[in-house]
Length: 266
Image 1 (cartoon, rainbow, N blue to C red):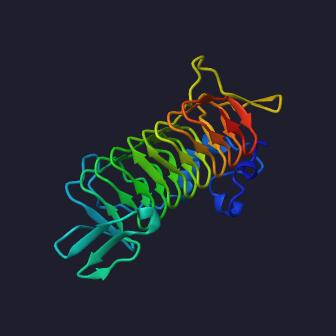
Image 2: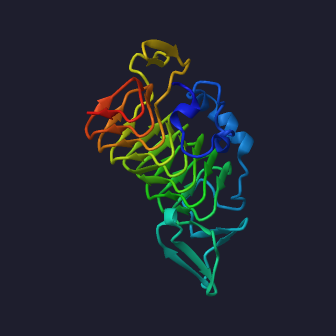
Image 3: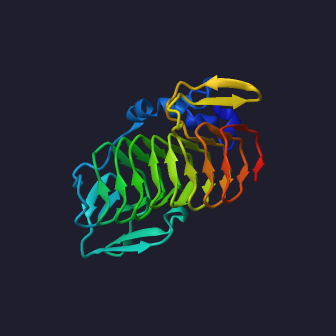
């Protein structure tokens, strides 16, 4: 009930071995995320202006980073569907990523995958991994110690820190993701908040089928299994664990504790 395979059954677990210890409680991935990120990161933004809004749009293609010039054309389609296209002198650059003018990269501990779009006004801190065909939208605040998988969306004014988003997870609008894990194809409704700090400032304890586990963590948000969906303006209390395919209805505050797969939380 508390291990990674209980929450992330879609796809091969071997693809998660860089982030999870499979025989440890799933929340250990949150505790160890910074160290694991530093072990796997291959930063690839050398030469990019840091700590200030980009003065111009940059293209990242096959390891080369260069500013947009007159012979470059960008078609701003949905990056998650591989419809973000870059042409150089009429030739398509497959998998080119676009870092828009006005985005802010605070340090160099950042790795950007293929076909990624970072929109104006987004602010990113490392260590940070962003997987292929992901969108980081205008106003997003990525505060570091984050892993964002392929085909994810970090949406408008969404804030995240010390958080894992597995492939296909989406937090499209006005969300807060603190010390949390979003499984594959999770979708957060607008205004979802994954709270991570108890008002009493104690370590977070998780109740699973009548047994309490002390995580040892002062901050732990939510663990959302594959396919979980939350309605607009929903809130999870610190230490909320939702099994795969669970649903949270709009305007609800739930947790803490464990909820089995396919729960409907009204």
